[in-house]
Image (cartoon, rainbow, N blue to C red; front, side):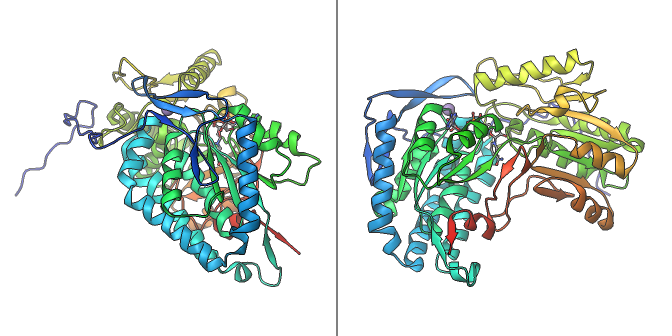
Length: 488
Ligand code: NAD
Ligand code: MN
């Protein structure tokens, strides 16, 4: 009989480095704005650096748009809406969208490398999740473009006009696809702004849109800071604001558009509860918990940042979590073996460390694996907190980093109450062997998405969005299409 190998689940697995090659990658020194079908310099002449957070090196410079640039972009989008895009049949619009999807697929490897370089996320994630899902959203919504009457029977769906869209830094290309694809399928034109720390894949997307030959002005791609975003929000000729970002900025935007004709959808923060019952397959659950919070360094709005474990299996689950953390690889985002990449920016790292400090002051017990962090760049060890109470700030506030607050529970009623005791309600996870328990929980948890025996799973056909301070409106599916339509 063959000898069984003993597998050592410690961190010194001697995997050789396996970095993606950047040899064929040609980044420009400067990226301009894409307005009215042309690449144009910003009116102010101002460019800013975007860096690689894994080593703090400057990757290149990107344009910072001002109010004049935004006015030009909105006017171009309006003209395109009136003269070209709204004159096309749904079938023709769909063809352009299929083309975008196909070109993203053709350039997938380049997109994945750039996403990881600019944002710090592991290549495995950008390669297997961000980029394929972005293409999938264009494919999916392309299919709806000529079927709006079927999607909304007897309601005479009509495009809104010009959509202003603002996205965060955690999933740049994917968030852009969530927004641009349904807007175009519904017949709108778009002005979209990237986040300051991860603008690059949107500039590549501008090249894709150009190559796909969309009529000038249908999609305008803008880079800049928060002020640039406010120029889009305040422009009087924008018909809809689609925002993904923090609850704090979402509130500012809502105050600014109250009393205007602008329609809005808001995808904001989260503090998801992941719940493990004693009858759950524990190894699978532990893997899901790890994926739910340490995936993308916890830079995920729907991250499972609160864990509730049924008391009878708590010690076992905690030990499994610690063992698994010890085996995770932290380091070069471009390495295919990397599980945990860099924190996106210096500011984000400061905020996360502040919360780790708060956790300690609140009396929580900390566990971090014994591992070395790279000397340059922004890094944070995956962190578990136990001895946590429901009222602690690390339980209540969004940290947006690799920090998991763990509590125990005894009964279903108790855990439902604790899970719902949050200002947020974006997502939740339930781990159990019993289907009946899952159905019971999904009707009672106040969260837009409830995953059962899995976590962080996305599909273009499935709507996503929050309750309470996590926002309103849905992206994905037919629901996401409806956000870009008006009805007679
Ligand atoms: P942020 O709110 O600081 O910025 C988001 C975007 O808004 C950026 O492009 C920024 O430039 C722009 N912006 C900033 N101030 C603005 C203003 N006054 N007017 C208009 N635009 C403005 O958020 P962030 O730090 O980039 O991202 C992290 C946050 O995003 C987290 O809170 C996270 O939960 C949330 N998020 C939510 C979802 C979701 O789907 N619900 C997805 C990803 C991220
Ligand atoms: Mn960057």
